[in-house]
Every structure is written in structure tokens, then in C-alpha cells.
Image (tube, rainbow, N blue to C red):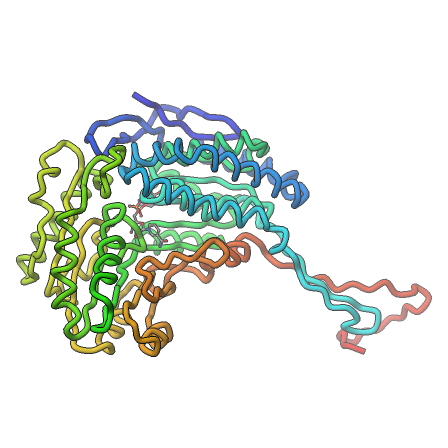
Length: 496
Ligand code: NAD
């Protein structure tokens, strides 16, 4: 059985053996590994390694930091397939999708290589006689990241490349469900020449997170995961005086107007709802069909679902893999049962698919029509291959649904009407909006984040706002007067 360790001070460190968790291959249902769970003392060891590395890392020239990140970028590029295989083995996503995850993570690393441009401050000459003012950005110190199971390689790359490019040192606590991919990235960072201690990784669960939250040497915390935990992390972290950005769950709406081409909308809905078995925070989980749009759209989606190949992620024919755990699969399947009892129409019931008879954690694609806003399948984040269709009479109702929903990650509109799309961009209460694009995940040089229950904190993640998050500004006022002109002046400094 594979043993999955921590990474502290530039090398793998076995846990103290007191606590551990099981890692599964979701496609076979077999346990393939044991992951160490860090104690508070082990977290302290990682933080102290990061603290020791901090002074010399923050003084390392920007060009040298970029050079190391650039080498890391090259190594990632070379090892795309190895990393994707690790993702498939523990998360279950199909190989092509895993390669997509690596590619989007790589974009974030590429962005961080150019951080010199973003660390530039401002300079104002002669703000008063002989006085100049300039602003500089400085790192925060030791910062931490806590990440979810659904993007075990990419989401950590939303954090540590920018954090260390800005001169911070980092402690990562990835998901305990699929810990091998982020650990492999630590090896690549070391191979790229990153000094020991600049990035550390501790495996574990709530015990590790709670220690990070209370540790006096952690200056800031980035979190991505479910909403209740995001809220708790934000409140506890800020309560302890830390800077926190905590990204939570989602319910992403795809509004389809009657003029939208049916095939285009159906292709997009199927791709965005069932890719990665619906385990994406930007997955479309609710289609809002306006007016007559649903009449042709629902049968078009259903027809496509019968052709989706569900199977193990390492089979090149598979388009959709299993869910992360057996319990999660059962929970997701429970929503289909609940929706039927609440009066929704079960257009396609993936619980009956043959693949569900295997020992893997599979559930076929499920499609629910005639869903209303009171049903649990709409109110809760399901995080599985279940798409709800809500039918509304008018565009305004669709926008109201989005506004009243407690989450606000992504929202998309499908239409040929530019005026309607522009209105939607103005009115949709979500942090990321797609126009004929169902999963509008911003490229690395913008920033990622939702509104309402999808993000606690002020700054979005990665891109320019990531650099803002990982730095604090200092404003310097300087003058070099002729000492012979010096006088005492008790008045408050004013411009002359
Ligand atoms: P999760 O909230 O269960 O876990 C996230 C992290 O928190 C993990 O590292 C986990 O070990 C830790 N954790 C779990 N329970 C904890 C507790 N009680 N106290 C402290 N830490 C705890 O989320 P998940 O199941 O791994 O991931 C799926 C969720 O993440 C979904 O809700 C999804 O929408 C969300 N997500 C959001 C985004 C985003 O950008 N907004 C991106 C990816 C995933």
C-alpha cells in the first residue's frame, strides 16, 4: 500500500503514525494508499521551516525567483502526463480532463513567472518642495493554503506560485482524498531549485487546518472548499488577525433564451454539467429555460446523455469518470430520489446505468426537469452528475433566481441577442459571467472568485488580485535636503 507523506524543509517527511486516512481509486473502489494526517506539532514543524526560509527568500532577487518558477513551469510541462495519471488514479477524472487541469494550473505558474511586472510600485516626484513619494509592495511572511479534492493540482497552483513569487513562504494543506498530485509538485519545485522550506506541504484534516488557523506565525490563509467550511475559516482566521480569502461552493445557472441555437446550448449544458462528473465548482448545475426554450432543449440534452461514455478515467474511451467516494456517490444519488418525490420529472436516471453495478463509485448522468426553487436538488450544492432544469416565463425571472440564490460563482447566458447578453452581464449576481460560454473560468491574468456564499473576503484568487492578496503596500516619503537649511517646525507637515 502506498504511503503518502508530508513535505517539510525540501524533503518527504513521514508522519508520526498516530493518525492517517485511506486513499481510494474511485474507479475500482479499492484502497490504494494511506495518507499521513498531521498533528499540531507536525504543522508547527512545517511553519517553522517556512519561517526560517522566509528572510533569505524575501531577499532573493525577483529575477531569481522568476527563474526558479520558470524552471518549475518547464518541469510541469514535461511531466503533464505523469501528473494527470496521478489525478486520474485518486480523483477519478478522465485522463483528457486531468490534462486540462494541469494545463490550467500551468497558466497560473506562467503568470507568476512575470511577477516582476506586477510588483512595480508607483512614484510621484516633487509632491512638495524636494520631496518624492513612492509605494512598494512587500510580502506578508508565511502564508498557508487549504485546498479541495476536485482540483488537487490546479487549485494549489492558484495559490503558491503567486505567493512565493511575491516573496512569501508557503504551507499547503491539500485535500486528504487525493494527496499524491500536490506532493509530486513539491518534488518538481525542489528539482527546479526552490530552496528548502519555501513551500511545505502537510497532509491531513481538520486538526491541521485548526492549527494553521491559530498559528501565530501564519500571516494569511487562502482556502477553497465548501461554503460552511469557507465561512468558518474566514471567521476564525480573520478573528485571529490573519488576512483570509475563502472561496466556497456554488450553484451555477445557465440561462437559455428561446433564440439560442438548441444544439449549441445542449452541447454546452452537457459538457459543463457532466464534465468531471459534475465535481467542478464552475459546473453548470441549473439550466434556466426561458419561455419555450426548454421544449426542444431538454430532449436534446437527454439524447446526448445516452451517448456519454461513463467509465474508468484511464480508459481512453471514457468521457466521464466516477465520483470521489462511495458516500458522496450515494449522497448525490439521494438527490435524484428526493427530487422525484418532490415532484420533479426524472428525465434520465443515471442510477440505473450498468456502470453502477461495478465496484467503482459511479453514477450515470441524471437529468431533472420541472425543478422549482424550493426543491432540495436546487437549494443544495449537489456536486455530481445531476442537472436540474427550471422553466420560467421571462428573462427577469431567470435573473431574479440568480439574485436570490445564496451562491454567486458563475452564471451564463445562451442567446443570439447581444442586447439581452449585455443586460445579463450587467444584472447577473455572480462573480464570473459567461456569454455563450458555460464555464467562464477566467484566464490566469484575470482573477477567479464568486460573490455571496461563494467567496468570503475581499480579494479574488490568482491573477492581479492574487498579487494584491499576497503583498502589502508601503508608502515612502523621502527628501534629501541641504542640512544647512534645516529648522524646527512644530506644525503638521503640509505641502509647500
Ligand atoms: P471541503 O470543504 O470538504 O474540503 C476542503 C478542504 O478543507 C480540504 O482540504 C479538507 O481537508 C478541509 N476540511 C474539511 N473539513 C474541514 C473542517 N471541518 N474544518 C477544517 N477544514 C476542513 O471541500 P471538498 O469536498 O474537498 O471540495 C468540494 C467543495 O469545494 C465544493 O463545495 C466546491 O464547490 C468547492 N470548490 C470551490 C471552488 C471555488 O473556487 N469557489 C473551487 C473548487 C471547489
